[in-house]
Image (cartoon, rainbow, N blue to C red; front, side, top):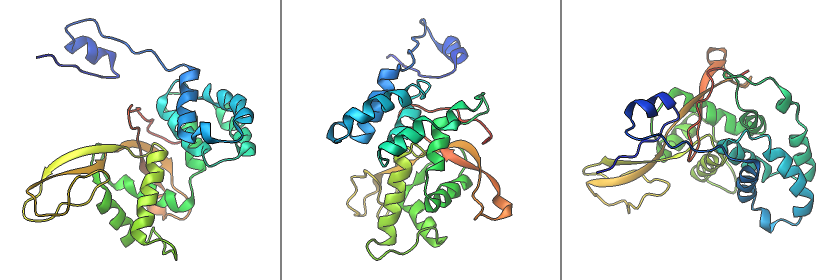
Amino acid sequence: MKILVTTRDEEIANSIGTITPCKLSPLNNAMCWDIIKKCINFESRDDQQQLEQIGQAIATKCGSVPLAAQALGFMLSRMDLKQWKEVSNSDIWNEPFTENSVLPSLKLTYIAMPQYLRLCFAYCAIFPRGHNIAKDNLIHQWIALDFIKPSNMFSLLQLGEKYVGQLLGMSFLQYSKLTTEIPFRPPPRSLRSGSDGSNASCAEATSFRPLHLAWRCPNTLSEGVARTTALGFTSSFQIPFPPRWP
């Protein structure tokens, strides 16, 4: 039997490895641009020629981090050419960056986040690091706290699904498969659960696994939670977020 261990900590790799660790090279700018293009569905856009040069310039600012490219791609997918230029020329890219700083791409994504989504995002801070959050349970909690406002077109649950999708797209949530024993009652629905709602004794539920990211809450939150720990995520690579939002 062979066991493959992946880690970002070189000391761990050296202490448990039986062979020389294989170090993955950072993403180059072209790879980051490819991730962004996939997120914005670049091939279907009519303004490809205008966006190409600006997009490549933005890709150089990702710091070889796939999460940064994915977050930027989701944000840019909802922007026009003028807004792309504003992102590329943002002063945030020029701010000093240290180990305790937030990735500029995540900061830009957060700034562009709608106010209603910030409240839902901030609420996730009550869950401890590494906690799995069942999607439907989280949405019902948002509804109970009146974070999701009624709409003439969509139900509260549909809006909750939309909010989850947005946080996933921004890389602030990630999918996490969790198999649990649920006897004598239908398992909760999940993003990609194969359950049909029957009284099965075992069901596969999809939930979310958080990482920590500190930030200053918007003014609409009470003073008691003026500084809280929010959640950051990546679907393929977990990034060690800094403990404090600048």
